[in-house]
Length: 114
Length: 111
Image 1 (tube, each protein chain N blue to C red):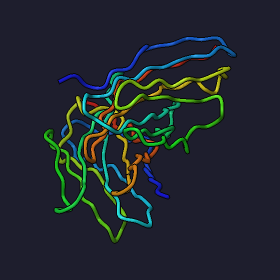
Image 2 (cartoon, chains in turn yellow, cyan):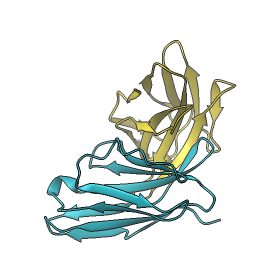
Image 3 (tube, chains in turn cyan, yellow):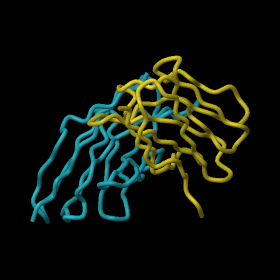
């Protein structure tokens, strides 16, 4: 079975500051890793994913995450946040075979203030 | 193209009543998942459909919960004799390769 731990339930930052949202996972088999974002009163959107290949993956809006197998981590980072990045961020893992259900962390609320 | 759609968007029901939630997946997506998101918590997997194979029901919390899907089309999630702890947002997702696309969810409130 897989599990995901997001250590921070809430991360307050000032606009233009860097941010890191932490995610650690547990699995006995190879996995795919995902970050989803949920803006206020909106549905869940895929932000970025790691399936294979380069361990550093990037999104179109400046976020990046690095898959670290030895530390079983997939932390999300952005060098300079905007007010519009305020949202709930969910880390998720699935196996890379079988029916690939997503196992989610409990989420981190990113609060960006001016 | 159209994304995953769900109906109703909001449902308020009295304890003990049955409810039915609907999901329209993206056309051509053979895999369909139901998840539940309770307030302040992450998403919990409920059930998975893949084509005409038997569904994986391992996440259903009780026998009051059931779901159906005909082929690769619409899916319905039914909750019988609703309880207050069933209050949550119910999310449906369909999958293309490794990526799951989520619908907007149905917010269920049991009073």
